[in-house]
Image (cartoon, rainbow, N blue to C red):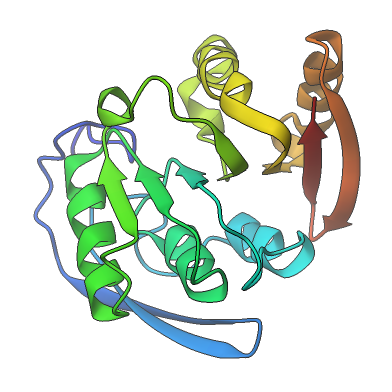
Length: 201
């Protein structure tokens, strides 16, 4: 056992390289993963629901798009694939996750449009057409709220954020909190105990 979490900046656990396979929008993906990152052995069920139920961008989307808490990069890789004209920012505090996300973008031939970064490396004046996240609920409510208060205001005019949260992990209370903060929040879909929230200004 170690003290590592998927939100640990520099995991100490041995990498234990592995691959994760999944399909989204009719395309098959095989991505590299490793111990010490979020959902290292499979596509997280919440992420799967998000990618299946939310409205993916398309070829007309010009971005920029943000994958917040990208892990090994499944959301960022899907976004870059389905929206070939959009730059994608893949942001994570976990160094190993960022390395994997960059490698997976290269594997798919989209590394020229996928910018893998720490939160501090994202230009302060950059706004996003879309924000996508399976947010790290287990960091605690206060830290989660700080994260959303930091990034949701980066939505460009007319932009939309898509979040997936487990109902048993506080999805409904998070929806109420977001409304209290002045956001327009709709429960776009519910599946397998997860809420997909659509957030706009």
